[in-house]
Structure formats: structure tokens, C-alpha cells
Image 1 (tube, rainbow, N blue to C red):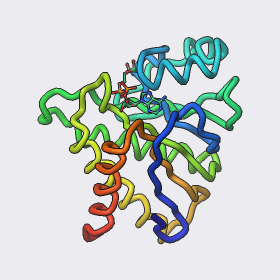
Image 2: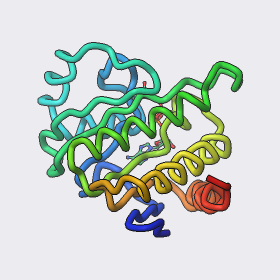
Image 3: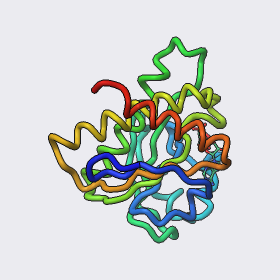
Image 4: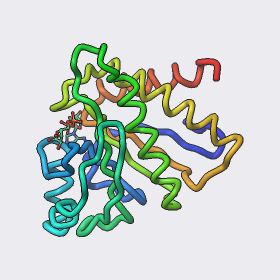
Length: 182
Ligand code: AR6
């Protein structure tokens, strides 16, 4: 799926195997080694990442931080803190959109050309998958539109998912996002 110079695509795989300029971690605010995709990233990156993150201050929900990738041969890891699902009336959608936007902005500010995301918040944090995908579809469509006025370095946004059913949900949400008036 290409929107101007920006390609948005989904794939099935292991995020830690991606060789985009950056991968995005579904992080916690403390930026500590956790479970899920976060645990897999810390395991692959090695102890240097634990040491580096221990020196960082807390990252608020909806925000993101860049670190080196240590033993993963890419340029950086963007740690995005998505919201925990708490029924849907506690700003979850805006916080999730903000976590994606912050990651995209950080990638642009770093001059990265490609970035790979996991399905932030839909695992341990319990965000319903279909609702999260709608937020992501809208956020990426808005981002793609904003590039028409302000071209940036980012050329590829890849979403790395664990199975085909999840990929179908994201694909549909990305298509829907592009149909929305901007
Ligand atoms: N590659 C791609 N996707 C993966 C991988 C992988 N290797 N492993 C898991 N997923 P989660 P969250 C999928 O729980 O909900 C951590 O402890 C997984 O199937 O990793 O944002 C953090 O430190 C799911 O669809 O992230 C936080 O405390 C998606 O990644 C908390 O969990 C996200 O699930 C964050 O929870």
C-alpha cells in the first residue's frame, strides 16, 4: 500500500528479525525489560539495552524514546508506551494514536527511512485488536497525508504481526483509514 512516497505494509513474522532502520518496542513506562514483544527485543538486543534503559527517566504513556539497538543490527529501537485497556473511556484511543505518532516523529527526527511496528497494546495491555487497528489505520492515514505538505525521510512503515487473522484486521483498517476524508 503506497501513499505518496510512503509505503505502509503489513507482514507476518518476528519483529526482532526485521532489518528496518528502527523497530518499535511495545514498552512500559519504566522502559524496563518486560514480557511479550518487549521481552523478545531485550533478549535479542542484549544486556547493553538493559543498562542503557536503566539510566533513562520514565516515559509517559503515549510517548516514545529512542535507544541504540545494541546486538540487533539496525540503527535504533523506538520504545513506544501504549495504554493499558481500561474499558475505552479513559483516553485509550488518543494515547494509542499518540504512541504511534510519537514513534513516527522520532523516526523522522532521526532521519530513519524505514520502521517496523508491532501491534502495540493488544497483548499484555489488553487493548481489543479491532479497535486498536482502527486507531492505527486513522493515525497512519493522517501521517501519510501530512507528508504531502512536509516530505520527510520515512519511506516505509511495516507492521509485523503474528498471524494472518491479525494481519487481515490491520489491512482492512489501513484501507478504511485511507478512505476517510482528511
Ligand atoms: N514479533 C511481533 N509481534 C510480537 C512478538 C514478536 N516477536 N511477540 C509478541 N508479539 P505485547 P503490549 C505481539 O504484550 O500489549 C510488556 O511486558 C503480541 O502477539 O508484547 O503493548 C511491556 O514491557 C501482541 O499482538 O505488548 C509492557 O509492560 C503484540 O505483539 C507490556 O508488555 C503486543 O503485545 C506491553 O503490552
